[in-house]
Structure formats: C-alpha cells, structure tokens
Length: 415
Image 1 (cartoon, rainbow, N blue to C red):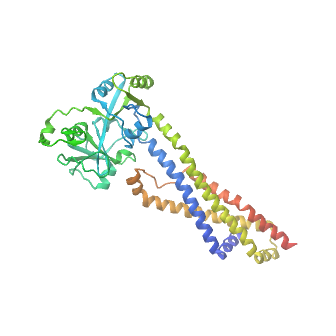
Image 2 (cartoon, rainbow, N blue to C red):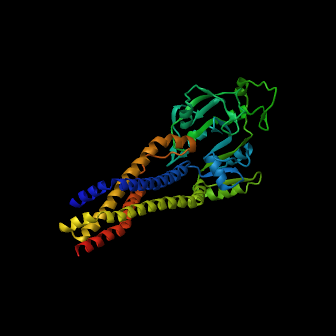
Image 3 (cartoon, one colour):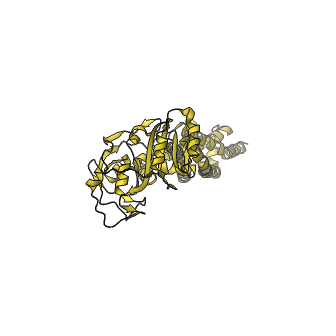
C-alpha cells in the first residue's frame, strides 16, 4: 500500500512528462484495440450475411465476384441468366427452394433487388435467423416495395410513401423511372447485413419499369400506363443470380458439378462458406499488416514510457537518497519504478478503451451508412481482454531497464 501511494505521488510530481507518455500510450492502445475489434466485427458481419443457402448460382465469373455482387451488392455481374435456365434448375428434384435475384437499379445510392416472396420465406442470416418485418408485409402488387431497415431509417420512409427507382447503380442518376413510382408496403427489421441497405421489389416490378427501355434508354412515344402494367403478364426474361436450398446435403457437390457443366448456358455454382473462406484468406495479409502497424505503434509508446522513466532516474537522486536513508532496500526502488510503469499502462488502458467506446457510440451510424458495417459497442471480448493483459505485461517488461537502473543507483548511494 505504501509502495502504491509513493508511486502515485511520484508520478504526480512529474505530471508534465507523465501526461505526454500517458497520451502516447492511450492512443496506441486505442489503435490496437480498434483495429482488432473492427477486424473481428467485419469478419463476423461478412460471415453472418447469408446462411442456409447451399449454393449460389450466377453467370460464369470468378467465385468471389459472384459472392460479392449476389450477397454483398458489391460489384457487377458479367452477364445475366435466362429465365428458362433458372426455372429448369429450380424445378429439379434436388432443389428444396430457390430465390432469384435481379440487380441493376438503385434508389439514392441503395441497390434495388428484384426477387420473389420466397426471398422473405427462405433467406436467412447469422445462425439461421429469418427475415422479420418490423412494419407492413411482403410485396403483392407489381409496384410494391419493401425496404431494408437502414434505407427506411436514413431516407425517412414510412408505409404508404412513394419512391422513384433509378436506372443503374450510381449514387446520382439522370435516368429515372419517374413515371412508375413504387409504394412502400413493408419495412424489414434490422439484420446487420446488406439486407438493411437494400430496396426489394418483385421481378414483375423490375420488368414493368423496363418494358419500354432498350439498351439502357427509354424509347420515345411509349404510352403504357401503370394500371395496364399491373394487369399485364410480366414474365421475367432473365435474372442476375439465384440461391438454392437443397433437399439433401449429400447431393450438394454432385449438383454443383452438374450446374457448372450445364450445356445450355455457362453457369457457376459456389458454396457460400467456401467462397467466404477464400475471401478471408485474401484479406489475411491486410489484417496482419494492420495488426503489425498497431503493435509497432504500441511498442513505440512503451519505449517512450521507458525512456521517460529512465531519464527521471537522474532527477530523482535526492528522492533515492532519502529512501535509502530511511532504510528502503535497493529492490524497493526496482519495484517502485515497475509499479509506476504499470500504473501508466493501466491508466492508458482505461483511457484508450474509454476513447474507443465513445468513438464506437458516435460513429456507429456513420460506419453503417458509408461502409455498411455494423460495429458493436461492446469490444471487451475475450480476445481483447487477453490483449489488454498482454499490454500491461509488455509494459512491465519494457520497464525492467529503467527499474534496474534505479536499483543500481540505490546500491551505489548506500555504498
């Protein structure tokens, strides 16, 4: 207890240099914890974006490209799949359910996904969590639209509001389907996945807004009304991709090979889990680089604290003399300096963790809206607790040199 009070008073007497060392170490711990937490949350978000789908099928392309545009709405497909091909595969006796996906339009920077009501019945995320409606219902009419939670929140939409879709996926588009507005009939509950940033319409709705368009341009002189389109037989001509749930897991690889060898059209079928593993293998180098940079920042801060303690030994010669006069042994000085380093490390951990928590609270909406990344506020996971313990132990190790210097000076003074 006496040692702790003495160490604290000693730090207060040198508060100028101690505050600078404290700030440097706090920032390094903030960076180290932040990188580790965001890395873990990003991996968790990607892994939980889709579950339950045995295969994802698209036009022949790279496996990662198919995964990214079909699940994460990143990138663009190389080609579409004919509707007849989709029906043939979806009606196979191996298939339990199928979810078609049609991409290509947007609304104020959010991707539009054309699908069927099977999407709301069979699509799941995380640990087989189904989609849940926070308000309203699934689309029934041609010009009904269902919004993801983040779209409705950021754009302020309510049930019954009308919105205009734009041709293409650019944030700002000059080709809008403004003559055929959609009505919001449902808003999904938050999932923490790309579903939250998606505008969902029916495949018939996608066909309706493009019925008089060719090569991305609306044909002049068209007078088809919205009411006529609602009564028309709007058969889809193609889809971008589709997800499959199979009757038997045993047939998965055989069915995947059959799709990849489909004679009528070049197709690619991927296993989402395998493609995600490949994605993380590619990102492993980036992850390790970020962790290495963060660790080097922390090592630099630790060396700064060690240098501060070492330089203070010369300034504390009278303090050391006084401690030796009253009978303090040399090892008392050793443990005193070690305790000072541990106090600085402990306070830095508290400040760095507090700063990270505050940033996560205030930047949560920004990360979601700009990066589609749901980062939880609770970063005190088991890994991060071990990391904090490692930081404290590393601080004690780095402080050995100034502590030994104080011990040696105490022995010289006594002799």
